[in-house]
Amino acid sequence: MTDRKFANTLARGLSVLRAFRISDDGLSHSQIVERTGLSPATITRLTYTLKELGYLSQNGNLLRLGPAALALASVAQMSASFLDLANGPMQELANTSQTLVLMAVRDGHSMTLVRTWRPRNASSIWLETGNRVPMSRSSTGQAFLAALNAERFQALDPDAELHAQREEAQQQLAARGFVFVQGEARYSKTVNAVSRPFYASDLGEPVVFGCGATPEELTDNRILTEVGPMLRNAMQDLENKTGGPRALDQLRA
Image (cartoon, rainbow, N blue to C red; front, top):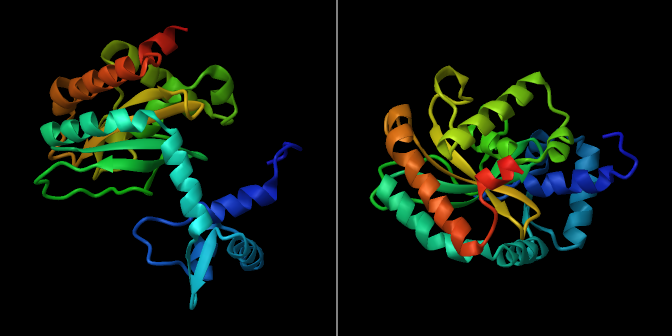
């Protein structure tokens, strides 16, 4: 990054914290190097500093998120007041649709799952909190792109393909009230999902709610006729409860 205001050392330190997944039972230095793409010497300096500050802890050769990181996550979650209102309806949506309902936030040029609601009696659900999906060619990412204003979108330094994906997502959102990527355009052949952005004033930028399952369980037709409308209605109810702007109102702004 060439912006003089951008603190590269801070960005690298945060990339270390983002390397951890909920399924990890600790990470070695070499695993952090692999996940961040930073040099071993840089990782040694950063992890030492983060340990001293309490953001990492170490047991033997494995590093884990420390108490300072847990405290920060707790504060962030408590400040997102809309989550209290979302929990019940999203669990009901998961049970009714028999899909994994998720909430994702932007993480660089990816979307990270920060909350999931699993349906009761589900056979297999493949995603969990901490998983990332690409912004490009995922319904989650494209719903986020559709919700961004022009200035924030340009800050992503988008190429022509991302411009086209954003335009397509905005058209879907205006026409149907939800966004999904069909067929060969999907980034993954094992996941099918439908998404809708939510304007979270607490967080300063949109988050995305979605429903996902395997393509066999969640076909494109089922998205269009059943699950997509269910997600749209649930999100409209949440917008009414929180008093926040509707997705379509923001598109017209």
